[in-house]
Amino acid sequence: MDRRTLLSLIAGTIAWPGAVRALPSLPPRKLRLVNAHTGETFDGFYRSKDGPVAPAMEELSVFLRDFHSDATIAIDVALLDFLAAVMDAAGQSTATVLSAYRTPKTNAMLARTHFGVAENSQHIYGRALDIHFGANLAEAMRAARGMRRGGVGWYPDSGFIHLDSGPVRNWDLDGNGFGALLVGSHKIRFAKTDPTVGSRTPSFRQSLLTEDQRQAQNVSQRLAELRARARAEYVHP
Image 1 (cartoon, rainbow, N blue to C red):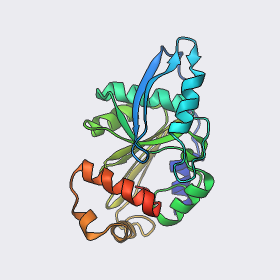
Image 2 (image 1 turned 180 degrees about the vertical axis):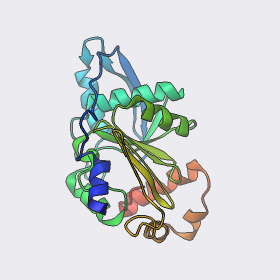
Image 3 (image 1 turned 60 degrees about the vertical axis):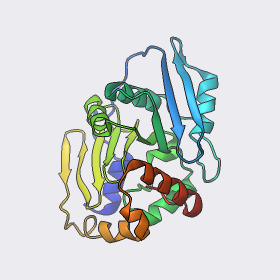
Image 4 (image 1 turned 90 degrees about the vertical axis):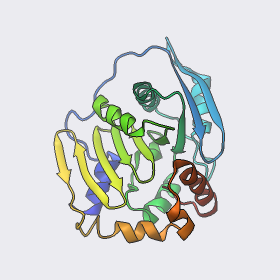
């Protein structure tokens, strides 16, 4: 499998039959979020008993904007429902948003410089979030995958998970590259020696970090470095 096909699967632009499941009607829901790049917060109901709350959805569109350009898009309410369900399952009251909407220009820039950034990412359509919790991140990832409500990417080295409301698929990415990709009932495994994946990732990842950054061990340091790199160099985790 070539890199373009792999990233298309991650982006959700190639779907297996039955990969997306309809959701039942949902009760009122709220979210408490922090934007890692802007420091802004959202705390309130985005869904009432009658459906999405228009003013809150407009506020979330701004809150989850592409911070590189301040461009906004309507955020898919199914994505927010997915996030709220994952937070509940992991016992988390607050989530830190590391990446949300990206313009095509921003995404193209990231795709050129970062392995694992799909060229037609769900982020472009307001259907994806990269998030971090203070604890229970692995538990949240497992709960999200069990829900089968969209894409779930696990980035243990960087300390975040990706959620999207596209087709059901799962993938892992760490310092050694992709381990496996699961789309519907089709599981694809990747060896660390795969020339399109594993052999490239360690040196590529290291090239993005200074010596001090490579020494950082805790999440607080990683978040601080993320903010600094994103503002100064437009680097995405």
